Image 1 (cartoon, each protein chain N blue to C red):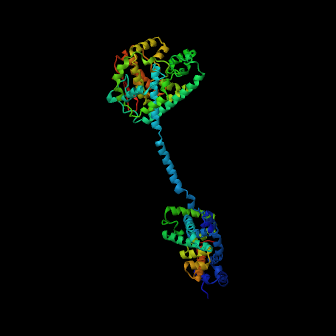
Image 2 (cartoon, helix red, strand yellow):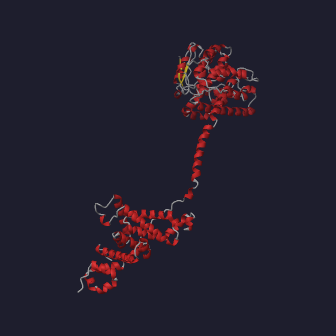
Length: 449
Length: 180
């Protein structure tokens, strides 16, 4: 009798027998135990199941790594790119722009000085010689700041040390504007009227009048507008013949030494004041364009509002150079020895008579001032405004100071000129006006010492 | 292989195309966790890609590739103890990552034929040696002689192991209650 078949015995049988043989020999046991039959059926279909399992699902995608040959450019491209970046940075530092711009800015200031001379009646044909230029350079070296006294302890740091580059950049910008204006003037000369038709004194009170005043027929409307937005302008075709080109370059080159500090500039105040009793004030010179006004005039009137919005941006760039330029202008005026008392008297009379033309004449050239220009508190001009009102209260009627142009450099320059112009007058009873600048060139205080 | 040696990036892909299904079948039935099988697939493919230049006889690419696969799977199980499906529901089922991967594997298995997925689980429960030889014969389609040579075994031993593995699978299927 055969032992009863079970799974263990069937497993052993399958190692030696084929399933068909087992079915033949153990048919009864297979019918008795379905598991045995199921095991046999699983074994019989195992090969097929395994083959189906083999192709059951798809393999993942193998990403072939990138060949190194694809990156053969890296060893030389990356260093090259780095070298290019370094070269760009280095190149930007090596550009002679700041130094060149500083020289141009200085040359422009020099040019302003010579234009003043020419306007005062200096021999235009001869132009400023080296001998004439030398005292000017000496004055600049001393940094006299005519009519303005700044205490030594409050003198700012040397101008140009911290913001010299910005200063120079702005100077270059202003010079380019000046050149553009000159070229425009030259081109306009061909179309303009004869010199006899040129305005005798084109100092007006509005930017729009810079053009409008060139035509006498438009004088009245421009004066009306001037009451609202006064600004100084300069007459055209009034350049000193000898004050351009070579002289400018020469003078720009002469400014190679260290920039004078404000304290050094003020050191010559007494000297400058002693020269202030010369016969004719420079304020009434005619036919000379005010560089300051020229800068303001070149500003598109349409952009005035935009400039006002951008005033804060200009502040650092534009304000700082102004003391230097103002010092030069003031110094030249003091050399001319204006009779400030008589000038103030005439200003008072013109002001009380509301004769804007007469007032404008008093502010010709370097002092061609649109005095409503200092109300922008962002420049700390509130103190200046108050001081101006205080100083001008007696004998002159109070002048409302209102910033006309957002060109703050211009504003500050003009203010300084105004301050020194009235300084010897009775308004402040001969006292000094102190303009105190911070290291950034901003005026922080204006008033009596 | 010459194209691969000359730098053709598509050459290895073409070589692998003939073997990739078998390799994947071998791996996915060797390793219970599908994600591990995928990692092994990439690892083996990369090894083959890097070392293909060492293969002198291109006709033996399949055998050579599965040799790499066998060694890699062995190394895998040395690094990581084999996880039995019987332990999936228990506390000792392993890290959460493996449980999640197994769960995903199970989900995919549902898409597969139910009977095949059961068979795969049974294969996973085979002893390591028997599973390896069976899969080399069935999935890699390597000749038994070559399997014997590769594994240093007698040919008859290989044949016996393969048959015994199939018998065990059949019994496991019955004991698990799987109907044919």
